[in-house]
Image (cartoon, rainbow, N blue to C red; front, side, top):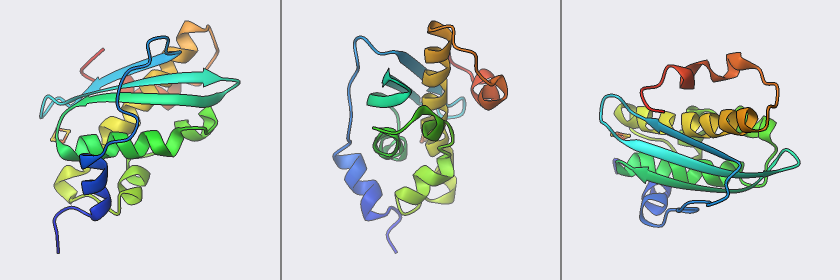
Length: 141
Ligand code: FES
């Protein structure tokens, strides 16, 4: 069996939503302390809906495929749904990742959460801090 699914290879070779949003409403950057890879998410939000999302990932193929799939999964969705997106769901949508590459998908979940936190803070919106505990302990700003 191939190490990577066709979906992983497709999203790695043709990543969706790559780039930056200049006037983003929320930006989140996270890094993986072990490998040093970095992922940055930009969100455009209107009426609690993620109208647009773009990412920049300086990392491995699994991290690129995970960010690409994660952006597809949250685009056009309400914030509440984006907040519940787990790295497991991202990996499942990619038809799986090798066990030792699962940590790469965590970057996607955390970058989205961090961007949403940034959105809440910039707009002085009250939010449930317990939802963001994982990104608060992260190694990058
Ligand atoms: Fe660093 Fe995949 S090896 S994110």
